[in-house]
Length: 366
Image 1 (cartoon, rainbow, N blue to C red):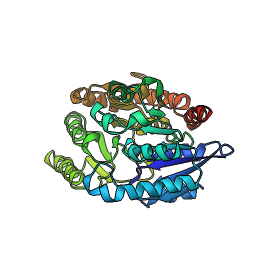
Image 2: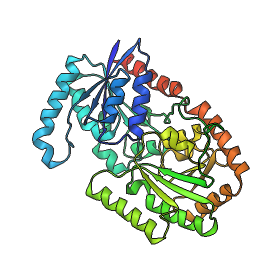
Image 3: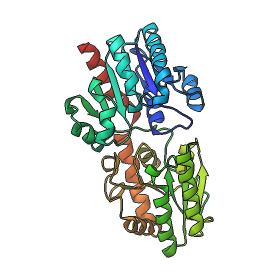
Image 4: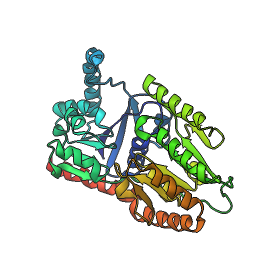
């Protein structure tokens, strides 16, 4: 078997990149590949990987570019290199560009192919500091996330666009036996509470909707990281809900690890960023309203599985929510089309095969 070392940026909550890595390592061809995952912290994600039989090692990797990390980062890189040598690693695959400085040093000492997965939309300035020029291959989750990497001078020839995937057996449309508990039309936004996810804008949209349509409820599903920046933003979101007197109409659920059940409780997903949650919602038979950012344009089929709006058109988004709330037949039609599209586009086997093909191509060249 071919040992592959995966680096995960897992901290305390399981986000989209962690889910995608889990799908990958648990569905690799076990006759060909042996995955070994490095996580920065212990926690639920590590437990899940180990339960699935994936060799998982906890190794603290301090932020490479922070001055305070200077005394410890080289020690961490030394430990990581020794571990990779001991495991006879043949490929290194980072699940987040944040880890690329470590990948660069592994490549130097081991002389093996290295891959960087890009789960988020980067600026050209961010691309410049993440050592992409040293990567043998880069996997972007959308054409839009590929664009700034190319703009920063990285050859498009070594960038593959592979959309996120979803477990189609786990995320399924709601059944009559296990139907929704609420009589209201429920709209959800899922993601870590942070400025990029724009929960504050979601509250503004909810306020516009409720002024015109009383039969709609909203859920903000997710929690903030325990940092001053994220705590401050979460407080601002809660204060905005109170300002509009919507505490009984907008529910902040906190972090939930049963996302397949969350989707069963919704009628519509709204995303103001992007990510694997779009595939999860569509697999669950939900229409999705998104903004033109990240992978959204490539995941939602406009007017067929949902709708895409410019990021600043919150009045258009609120109007579309009202239309769907008042037209359940249209909502069901879009949801059925979303499930069909998910089955043909977002399956795990399709996703994993594309990445395995990259592995074999790199190994043939090395």
